[in-house]
Length: 152
Length: 140
Image (cartoon, rainbow over all chains, first blue to last red; front, side, top):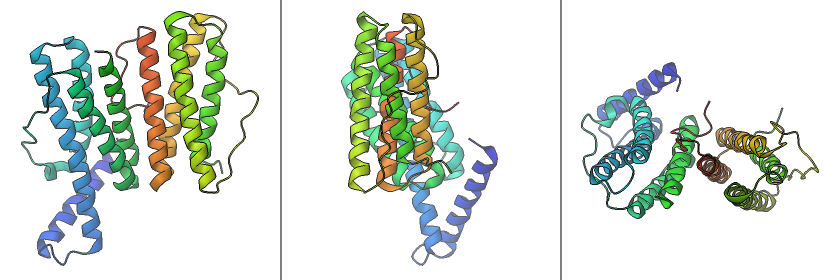
């Protein structure tokens, strides 16, 4: 992703957050509201990426499938999380999600991937033009993961 | 100016179906099965996009008798490369359509992009390419 764009977008997000604080939230302008909605959409998809990373870590520890294959899927989620975190900046929080999903079987992971795919499709349509392609890529990647898990 | 909306994606689906027909003649066994599965997925996408465009009153591009392919298929090896090339190209086309549409058209494009990415990943697995998945399908 273009670094200058990321910096500009982050500046807009932070400006919007500052404006919301100054205005006490209730009287925020429509632009600020749109910016905060945008931030929430990005945050939700980022949380899912982080949660999936944790879930794959647990699955790898449980050793119910080939470690290398699971690690590839885990690393794809890590790349999504990194890309989304660049956009969020400090707005994403430092600790991130800690809850793990169900890592006990390929079926459980597959269901989580399909839910994540649907979430990214929704973000692709509702999250604004600038990030539509990124969300489309994340949805497509999660769809390929769900398909891989069918044969694990 | 070229249309980068659903018509561009639909034409990519026509091209993929033509390419799979050409390549399939050189394949056997598990690879032929994978090609047939991909063919069905592209037919499903084509039909869904055709329905969406017809319902919205958009002009639907006609399917041509033949298309210029990204590579030639003369045996199983080159047929495999053609399928890999065409699935990649179709995914990239739908990725561009996502960027150039809004609302329900964008959702249709994102679904088609995911379907094509799944086809490419399946084809990689059928031909022993690892890893079969990538974090950002359609990006180069």
